[in-house]
View 1 (cartoon, rainbow, N blue to C red):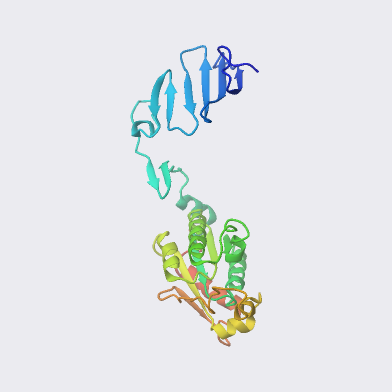
View 2 (tube, rainbow, N blue to C red):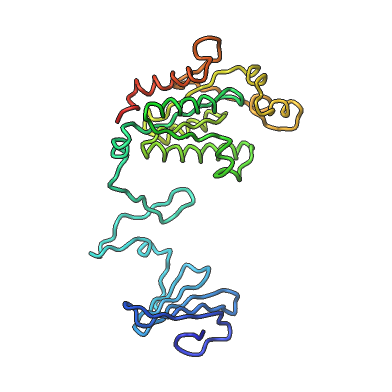
Length: 293
């Protein structure tokens, strides 16, 4: 291929051109600069010429430099020429704007005939969090209600596979799950998150993401010796042998909830069976109106 508009400079890598009904002749020239950088130039038979340099926040339009950091270029211009609301900075993300849709949470809830919320099941490893979560999901399914489980181990198979079990990574693990759970609740789905989440501050952070009442904390109040006796994954044995460091309940603390909505205790009789524990949560949802729109 040849460069558009003349002989290519010695550092030219490639160029191309194409034709369309709206643009009779347009050409892109990708150039490797002597200093190691690169440039992309858009040329046409008309008056528009745009050039952008790799690694730069400046572009040239018809020879006039424009700074991409300039606030005036950081907004979308409307057809009327008016400047819409300014873009936002959230965390490390700059120049972003929330885009609303005409289909809102209440519409999705009416469609599903239920209210979206987050049921956050917390407790020691082996306390039965995942088992109760599945029993709860099954009970809701039988009632024609849509739920989805965010299991701590399952999330580490995908979205959170890059995280360790160090304190800072555990906090990030919970933050991500909290944000995903928030989206599920906003969709109108009853989201069931089940993970150890040992620290109160992290659980409280997730609670703060949702409207009042939509975060339902369920504490699996099962003693350590019972969880260790169950040891379904063999993790307590490994932790006692020193092969796992920072294991909750052994050499890392678990902070029980102080003001959770539901406590499911381990005891013989009422509440001992996972399905019965699930029904306690279902009764709470019914009483709070979450099983109808």
